Amino acid sequence: MPDARDPAPSHPFGVRLVVAYDGSAFHGYQRQRGLRTVQGALEDAARALGERAPEARGASRTDAGVHALGQVVGLGVDKALPPSVWVRALNSKLPGDVSVQAAAPCDPRYNPRFDAAGKTYRYLLHCDVAPAPLWRAQSWHIAPRLAHPALRARLAFTPDRPRAPSTLLDLDAMRAAADVLSGRHDFRAFRAASDTRDNSVRTLHAVRMLPGFAGEAALLAIEYDGDAFMTHMVRILTGTLVEVGRGRIAPGSLVAQLGPRGRRESVGPTAPPGGLTLVRVDVGRPGYPYRADRFEPGAGRGGTAREPEPADDAAADAQPDGAERS
Image 1: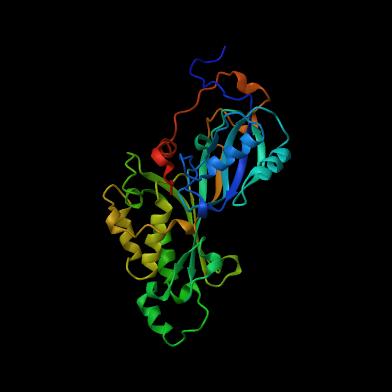
Image 2 (image 1 turned 45 degrees about the horizontal axis):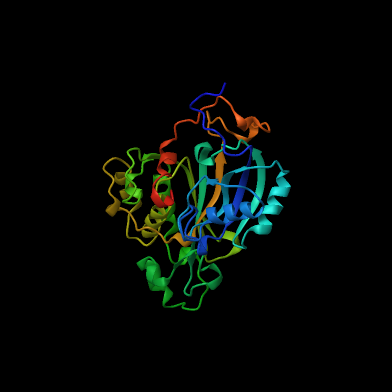
C-alpha cells in the first residue's frame, strides 16, 4: 500500500531531459504568464506531441538572459518512447533557441531540483577595444575604460593591437582571489538582497580562470563548480573578480567577506546576465527516491518512497519568479 505522504504521479511515465538554450530572448526558465520562458517552450512542445498537462521541472530556474548547455529537466508523460525518439520529437516542435540534447526514462515524479548534487556555471568576459557582435549576447564586454589603471596607460601606445584579457585585467590578482573564494564558506555577501534564506553556507569546489577560451584570444572564461548557488551568486562573484582585476578590490580583503559579517556593499557588482551559462548539473543526491536509474515502467503508479526534504538551495527555488540561483 502506498505511503499516504507519497505524492501521486500525474502521469504514468517520465523522461529526464538534458536541455540547451540561448537565453537571450527568454524571460528565464520558469513559466510566467504572458512571457516567453524555457519551461513554457518545453511544455508547449510536449502538448504539440499530444501530452496532457505537461510540467517541465528544471534543476535551475535561470534568470532572464542566462543560457544553458546542460539544464536537467524532469517531464511526466503519457507514453513510453525510446530516448532517441523523445529527442527528435521534442526538437521538431521546439523553437530554434532551445534544444533537447539527451533523454532517459525516469520516474514521473522525478524532480531534478531535489536530485542535484552540484552545478557548473561559466561566465564569459570579452576583453577588447571594440565589442564583438557575435559574442554580444553571450559575454560581458570589458572595454579599456574598465581596465586596470596600470594596464590602461599602456593602451594609448598600442590602440589597434588585438586585446587579450591580460592586457586589461590583472589575471594573477584574479587567480589569487579565486583561491580565496574556493572552499566552504558563508557567502551571504555574494547574494541578491531578495535572497533572505537562513543558510548561506556553500561550497565552491573550484574557480577556474580560462583565458583564450574557445580559441578566442580576447575571451576569458571563469568557471565555477559548486554544491549549490544562491540568487545571483555567480554573477556577484564574477563582478567581484572583475573588480579585483581592475585593481579596485584586493584579493586578501575578500577573506573578511566570507562569513556571517560579510556585507554585500563590500564586494563587487552583479555582472550582466548574458555572460552566464549553466554548463552542467550533476545529479545523484543521496537519498532521493525518484532517480532515473531506479525506474521501472509503470512503477510511478504507486510506491512507498517519500520526497525528501529539500536542501536549502532547493527550497529557495520556490521563491516567486524563479530568480537565478547564481
